Image (cartoon, helix red, strand yellow):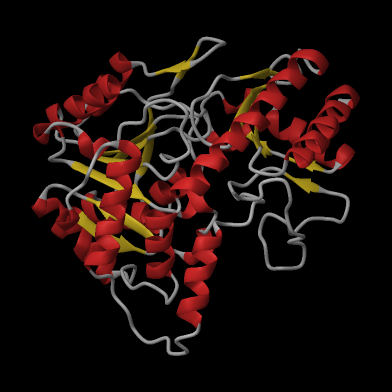
Length: 382
């Protein structure tokens, strides 16, 4: 039904991703090169035709759309009174850091992890503590002994979980989520779960809010259609907080910081995405799987020194390049200067990221082929 074979030229359109030189191919930031679902575009046209763009706030249709989506897509329905609109997951994370922790506190993450987490922590005067994920040359696992030790520190008051995990593409199991929640409760650490990549998953994904009632009393979950439907510039997300007292804290933060007022497109886009986007996402996931299979086959045949880390989520692939270099920034910079291929350097995610590059494959398969050929040329020249 939908076109995942073609794209449009986004150079000189204020696109962050495509603000590159004429010969460069950006395959870095988590921004797809597919047009969003036409049902979303139709909703935007309908909104624009109203020709008045005054103050707005989400009503029950917005929150029901979010709940319906999670029930139908993930077999887990959050209560609508747990929800709050916010203008983005990253603004929500920064606001929560400020609201539920104190200056000088430790905030725990699991490196290598989405680099903006570090900004949200450090820029607000808190300290980063990492329970580094353990890589066994095949997959990543949590070191639960180390996690408990770091959560037990009285200065650690918040853990930021990435579920599914960016950049390694790991979907945490229900058992793993239960262990994390139990430890956070044991040591009175609040748990913030960024689940922005939860819709593009290829194995069972458990929203953290679906855990047993006694495990979610310190939980905050951030979700958004932005990554799923490539609508990041619409600035719409939802915070789900089951505990009323904690929810009131978070609400006070986002309202004090003016993060709870939607723009004119945020509500209709979210409703259209969650009510009418099921078929589009299903086709998108099939295209991503095809692109991923192409990358796997190419690396095995043409670049065996580069290993693709097995993953079950996101359109971002984590490539092990330690056989080529232990300095991912140097390698990424060289590949870009030599071939024009612009990848994410793994070092920005910390942990063992210096051994990895991140590749965005949410693009037509012809673009993936171009990127792989450039990658081969860059690796060979390096």
